[in-house]
Image (tube, rainbow, N blue to C red; front, side, top):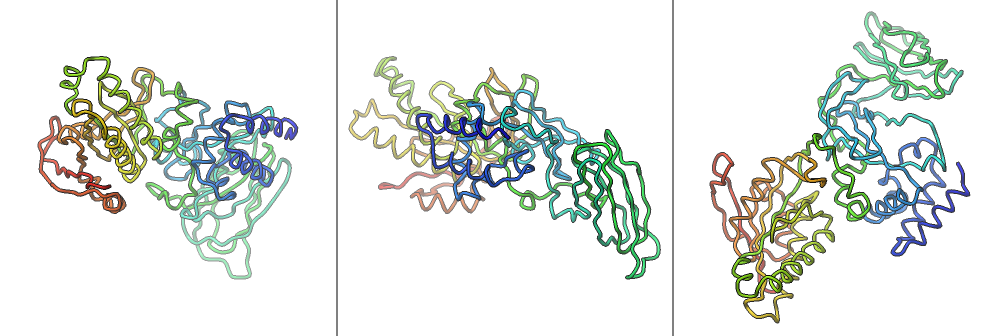
Amino acid sequence: MDTNLLNHKISKLRQRLGANVVAIDAIKNWLATSDTFQRVRINPYQVGEHSGLGLDAIVPEFLYGVTAGLFDMHWDIHCPHCNMITAEFNNLADTSGDCFCKICEFNFDADFSERVKVTFSLSKEIEDLNIIPNCDYPAELNPKFNMLVNFNQTEFVVDTLTTGRYRYFCPITLSKGILVVEGEPTKPEELESIQIKQLSGRDFDKKEIVVRPGKIKLELTNLGHAISGIYVIDDNLLDNLPLDKIPPRLSGLQLIHFPAYKRLFGNQVLSEREQIKIRAVTVIFTDITGSTRMYEQLGDAKAYNLVRDHFDIFFKAINHHGGTEIKTIGDAIMASFITNKQALEAVTEALINIKEYNRHREDTEKVKVKVGMHRGSAVLVNLNNRLDYFGRTINKAARIQNLSKSDQLSFSEDVYNDEEFLSTLKYNGWLVFQKTYEDLKGIEGQQVVYKAKLLEGS
């Protein structure tokens, strides 16, 4: 590691106008105590846990560090079965949702909110580790014989295996084989021994091994790579690893909701034909009620200024609560959030500030806004060189917004069933005053829609 260059880059980062020097020092301190494998893929969650700072402080400084040549940013695709990194990209424009895990030999569609993770590493001019990135296997898979071996070295581990079919592999070299445990168990004092050699390329010297149940000594000799390793796990993998069993990492969906990302990397979008699924995202649509009349009464210039002021109020609230504005459509705004709670807090703040904005204005100049909210799956796409969403969730959110009147929030049953949303609704002074069954254009079957309004004094 070139520590002089590292310190120089960090010093430059600290001098940036508006820099969060506390977060920058936290990153520097983490780097000083980290090991090599942690730095191959720097996880902002680990830096936050080490320093006691939240992602909202840590992540922007990593992003500014990328533009300053301090860090490289990586979009890593993780297999939903084994959690290994199946593909990595340095630019969102190169990312693909169509993936294949060479360890599991399994095709899958990457989920931008669950399996696309963003990490960082020191720029190659500061530290070129030349190590293939990989992840520790989740405890949920009950991995055994976990070890790393340097070139021309031999290591061994002793563990116990019961009857079954297992797979052994190296997450670094992608070498693999099958281990069958069958027959009469060995006696307690017996120790079966397995010798495996890591060859160059993606090969162990043995593709299939059969042993008896009991205590086993597994010995790995690395003849082909700077570093090799071995894991042994059950051959029957879970359909989808539960996210709460995997150490948290910054998802692609989380990252694009940081204002700093949009400011610095907003030009990074998917290729025109690429699309990536999202299991769940909260979408809001807002619109000004009576905007046509406002333009007629006030004239284009004055009405447009009111609309721009309304945009500024909403954009500030959206960014303040972890959302991102996707686009404006005339007087309307489309925005997305990671959670329903964040969306509600943003809407609450915006409507309160709109009310204050209107306080001393003539009735003809008062801006009245209606809002619709829905949560569900979506597809992330590139539309006109901007990130955008497509799918039923987007259509439904837009249709629900059409049901609102001035100063009202309408939302779907999917949102209403969120207990955190309901408690936030109550805490912020909202009153749910109506539950209706609606036929929404283009959406099959009647849909349950709730309507709420802010109580006076909220």
